[in-house]
Image (cartoon, rainbow, N blue to C red; front, side, top):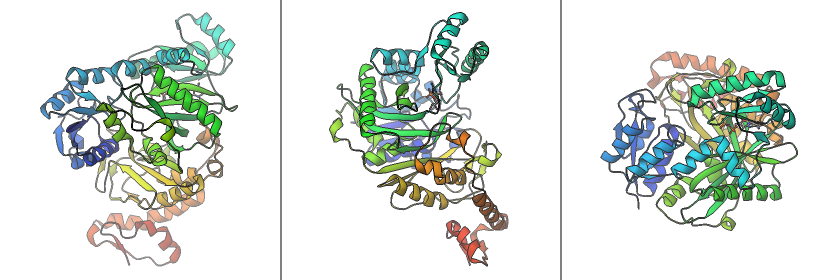
Length: 499
Ligand code: ADP
């Protein structure tokens, strides 16, 4: 039984993990950088320790400092969240060496799956379908040209240590091959300190479909169904949902079985995600295993009515999975939108400043996992994701309507967000049809000009308030009904009133 757990992370995921720990009667220990001293994850924690520094290298990526704090705080375990050190086998090993449980899989599994070449090899051995490709001596350019010809162009050059879409190049013809290998290798060297690359077939118009898996330390592995993550920008997910509209019950069963097979083959424990790519003929191929909790885990929690962080903690304490595959049901439909501090109309440039007004939507079937509150300072130092908005309902259409309502009732002033942009995506006829692929945002101009004009009017009406400076008594005179309905989400926030 854990008494105290340190969360080696920040932002929304640190807050989210804290809540479950406290619910389980476990004390949550936070760590923070200088910039994060007043942040929400510190506020929620039972105990908090400064990392004394501001760069990530000096703080959330500093293994020694974190282990030292964990020892001083006498924690039983460390939850790494996602990002930062969550997929660093050296960190997982350092925890074990300090006699602290690492809430995640073993260091060797993290290392194997963190190397896309090794991961593909392991999956091929386990008879899980992988994208046709090649990995070998990258300086043997004639051999690579031969292989690429056999696979057929376009091919994709990928970094073995890749992540976050970095170190990837699409190669349309042989003339581009050599240079793409070089530049992908260079980018990978800079980002990951590892220049190894491999090539695989570039799947046209694919869908990204991943399966949540869970393993315990007693050899049981189950899957918790899929998440469709095809709405991406620069290979980064922005909207995720479950179930996927692309899967028939038969295909779902087949992919779920493949995901479990993948997990069993590598002796997987704790929460993991097996990512697949689905081509236009509904062939699926293994992409990678993410050896941690995913950003989009609330989608799964909604449809299985469970708490994945709780399950992670129980498994880390050595408990057996309390359910078998047949107990897991996929019930209803959930959608998640990632709320970013960025300006979609200015090439998604990150937006910084103070959250002058920030009010999260609430209601049945609406969940917001956030790491900020009104007054929070949004800086350039960290990922621009402010929060995740998740809606859950019986059907996809109902979850879409609920999401549109929630996005319309999520007032944020002081910085620019992608909330309206997400609204345009969710409201788009093709998104509504469910016939989506990873190129959705390149194929369609989703910006809704009528909505943009409405937003402009609103911004002008609200700018008076923002400039007022005297927020406690700020009030707004609204003289027509249309304006009033535009301003509706801003009613009754904080001390702001409408007369
Ligand atoms: P990363 O680890 O950098 O996120 P992934 O291998 O998970 O890289 O791929 C990220 C995204 O890139 C996928 O969701 C998909 O959109 C695209 N992608 C990856 N491999 C292929 C492929 N072989 N063909 C087409 N698109 C791909």
